[in-house]
Image 1 (cartoon, rainbow, N blue to C red):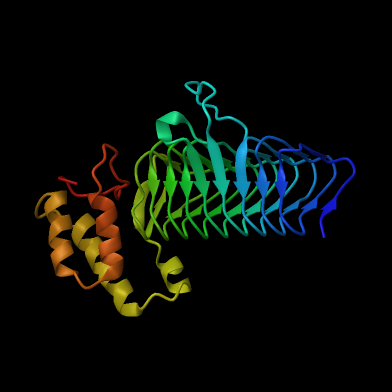
Image 2 (image 1 turned 60 degrees about the vertical axis):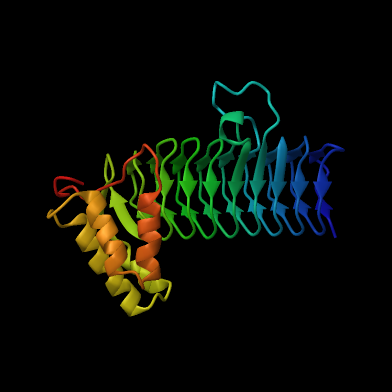
Length: 268
């Protein structure tokens, strides 16, 4: 059964799923689609071409679907797609895409966005991601599955945050963070692997050991160039899924560099 407070304002264009709960002073307009069992607590605003998946809960004063802060936006049709079972806490802002980024901002399933998080235009956020209070994504950022961003983290436009990585609180990330990596600082530097996260997610010990060895070979040696070390690790640890994930991420051709250890060898 739908529960809609008498003070909520809902446009005729809005589609509501089964058993949604919309609290006092919420405002929904535009081409909004709200999935089954969604809960909007109070004073939540959802607008634009926004789809929100089943079981998502949004807390007070969140602003979802308003146009991006990109000054190049000129009224083109854009959208925001949010998956299922997300928790979106107070004062979170999420913007749709722009024509420069494909027109869509996408958020996956089972994510936690704590107070004041900002997901900018054209971002892609995976599944089971945690963004702590006031963490901010610039435009066109990609955050892969199971990544954790600490409080007050800022991620520069077009940066990639790899799967199962950890970004320490207060970090400014201007370059890509490798999968399974752990970075911190201003600017963020690579401190090692997110071993705690790997163990919590029950990766096999042999896989973790292979990843640690490959990390050392790529980032902590100086016998040859960075590219050569990466390709050599590909051959040495060809049977390791985790190492291949890390190397696939590194070998994507793009202009942005990677967060490296503060004592990274020359040639990296």
